[in-house]
Image (tube, rainbow, N blue to C red; front, side, top):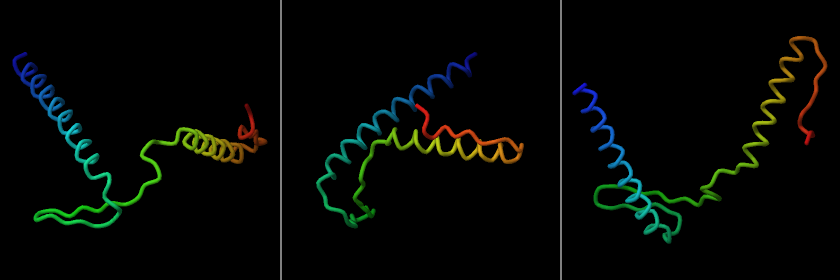
Length: 92
Protein backbone atom coordinates (compact mmCIF):
# COMPACT_ATOMS: atom_id res chain seq x y z
CA UNK A 1 0.00 0.00 0.00
CA UNK A 2 3.01 2.29 0.09
CA UNK A 3 2.55 2.93 -3.61
CA UNK A 4 -1.08 3.87 -2.99
CA UNK A 5 -0.05 6.30 -0.26
CA UNK A 6 2.43 7.92 -2.64
CA UNK A 7 -0.21 8.20 -5.36
CA UNK A 8 -2.69 9.76 -2.95
CA UNK A 9 -0.08 12.26 -1.76
CA UNK A 10 0.90 13.14 -5.32
CA UNK A 11 -2.73 13.55 -6.35
CA UNK A 12 -3.44 15.82 -3.39
CA UNK A 13 -0.37 17.91 -4.19
CA UNK A 14 -1.46 18.31 -7.81
CA UNK A 15 -5.00 19.32 -6.75
CA UNK A 16 -3.57 21.89 -4.33
CA UNK A 17 -1.28 23.29 -7.03
CA UNK A 18 -4.21 23.38 -9.46
CA UNK A 19 -6.25 25.41 -6.99
CA UNK A 20 -3.42 27.90 -6.53
CA UNK A 21 -2.99 28.22 -10.30
CA UNK A 22 -6.74 28.78 -10.81
CA UNK A 23 -6.68 31.53 -8.20
CA UNK A 24 -3.63 33.12 -9.82
CA UNK A 25 -5.30 32.89 -13.24
CA UNK A 26 -8.43 34.64 -11.94
CA UNK A 27 -6.33 37.40 -10.41
CA UNK A 28 -4.48 37.92 -13.70
CA UNK A 29 -7.73 37.93 -15.67
CA UNK A 30 -9.11 40.55 -13.29
CA UNK A 31 -5.97 42.67 -13.77
CA UNK A 32 -6.31 42.39 -17.57
CA UNK A 33 -10.10 42.90 -17.63
CA UNK A 34 -9.92 46.63 -18.36
CA UNK A 35 -7.85 46.23 -21.52
CA UNK A 36 -9.82 46.79 -24.71
CA UNK A 37 -10.15 43.97 -27.22
CA UNK A 38 -7.00 43.55 -29.27
CA UNK A 39 -3.67 41.81 -29.57
CA UNK A 40 -0.86 42.41 -27.10
CA UNK A 41 2.71 41.16 -26.88
CA UNK A 42 5.27 40.78 -24.15
CA UNK A 43 8.87 39.77 -24.59
CA UNK A 44 7.93 36.08 -24.60
CA UNK A 45 4.20 35.76 -25.27
CA UNK A 46 1.24 37.10 -27.21
CA UNK A 47 -2.20 37.77 -25.77
CA UNK A 48 -5.43 38.20 -27.70
CA UNK A 49 -8.45 39.69 -25.98
CA UNK A 50 -11.87 39.51 -27.60
CA UNK A 51 -15.27 40.67 -26.47
CA UNK A 52 -17.49 37.94 -25.06
CA UNK A 53 -21.20 38.28 -24.46
CA UNK A 54 -21.18 36.05 -21.41
CA UNK A 55 -18.88 33.73 -19.50
CA UNK A 56 -21.79 32.07 -17.74
CA UNK A 57 -23.59 29.18 -19.44
CA UNK A 58 -27.12 30.02 -20.52
CA UNK A 59 -29.11 27.31 -18.77
CA UNK A 60 -32.38 28.22 -20.48
CA UNK A 61 -30.77 27.98 -23.92
CA UNK A 62 -29.11 24.69 -22.99
CA UNK A 63 -32.47 23.27 -21.87
CA UNK A 64 -34.09 24.40 -25.12
CA UNK A 65 -31.29 22.84 -27.18
CA UNK A 66 -31.62 19.60 -25.23
CA UNK A 67 -35.37 19.55 -25.90
CA UNK A 68 -34.87 20.19 -29.62
CA UNK A 69 -32.33 17.38 -29.78
CA UNK A 70 -34.69 15.03 -27.90
CA UNK A 71 -37.49 15.88 -30.34
CA UNK A 72 -35.20 15.25 -33.30
CA UNK A 73 -34.23 11.84 -31.90
CA UNK A 74 -37.87 11.02 -31.21
CA UNK A 75 -38.86 12.08 -34.75
CA UNK A 76 -36.12 9.92 -36.23
CA UNK A 77 -37.11 6.89 -34.16
CA UNK A 78 -40.80 7.42 -34.99
CA UNK A 79 -40.03 7.66 -38.69
CA UNK A 80 -38.01 4.44 -38.53
CA UNK A 81 -40.78 2.63 -36.66
CA UNK A 82 -43.62 4.06 -38.74
CA UNK A 83 -45.26 5.58 -35.65
CA UNK A 84 -46.87 9.04 -35.40
CA UNK A 85 -44.72 11.76 -33.87
CA UNK A 86 -45.63 13.20 -30.47
CA UNK A 87 -43.88 16.53 -29.98
CA UNK A 88 -42.79 17.65 -26.52
CA UNK A 89 -41.83 21.14 -27.66
CA UNK A 90 -44.92 22.88 -26.32
CA UNK A 91 -45.62 20.75 -23.27
CA UNK A 92 -45.41 22.26 -19.81
